[in-house]
Image (tube, rainbow, N blue to C red; front, side, top):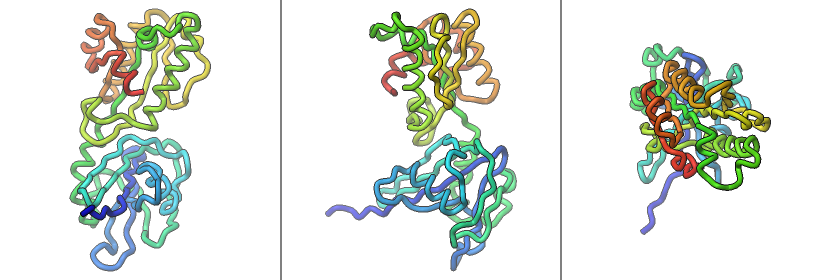
Length: 268
């Protein structure tokens, strides 16, 4: 007999600097007056991320385009699925109550979360989620090496080839990367991405707002190592994509993990 599967629950863990958006529930019973996350359910054929965005707008007035996803964590209990999207505020806003489930919406400092009366489900998962907030993956792409790994005529238009690569890797900032691919816990991560271009490829014009394009002034390898070192110093978990052995060694020396060009091409 087929098992009945309940519609997945979705939650938004929204970070603005060192503050977390919390909803004080307005329900009967033990939930009344307790703090939790903005939450809801998947509707129809929505993806988990689409459901979170819709619920955030409906329950807290979160404007479109104001959130950059960082992590989608999914707890699948076979008959019930809990999905939590961790996101960063990129366009500041003030939440507004637009749903009868909340009596208050508040930005609560992360260090004060446990001082509030918490919903039992959220209280039980907060320690795990809090640890994940310190993890920020980033990918640095050696564009010349990745483009050059496929003999598709890229040498006739190096800037155009770089632009096509940028467009492809930009999809990882919205579609995400499986945690296992970047050595991280959690279901799906949405990494920061830097693409380093050099020589004729520096003429790229069609870029994506979610991808940081670094135009190397001199050595492309030096620019890649410098970008990796900058991100490591900023607390990011960095993966450098290159198949160049010497550059791989230099990248590892500044604290980055290295993956080959094929790894990235398989992802995109």
